[in-house]
Image (cartoon, rainbow, N blue to C red; front, top):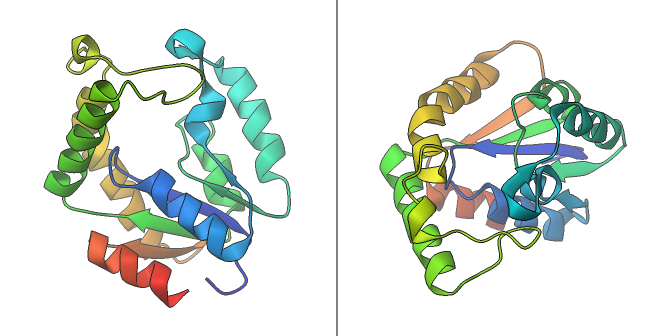
Length: 173
């Protein structure tokens, strides 16, 4: 990771962004912010877009941070200000399987996700569920990661193509 102090971990829903961000934070001592913890209030009420933009404008204006995603209304800030993007570009089947396994585990164990929120069987396949979001956002996120990697300007991009590649990356740091 070299001299990177502002790191964006990016990938499809279920790819392991939060896990990677947490591991990188432990390795580097750079603080990690869980984007979901900031953007989703109790009852799955989203923080208003203008408040998200203001919050992440301030956060990404600091000298060091790790974020486990970048949402649409302010993703440009994270990308413009990052020193490094760690892109989890796994096959759809891998991230989807992880998402379904994680969702089932959370529901069965009644695990809190963020701010008192929980997943339920009723919401798994709702129009606004994470499973549906995975299908609607996967191609766009993959295209973004690959475009960022191919760009001649912007932050350095490390595109990890498999969970094994991701483990090797973390172990090498």
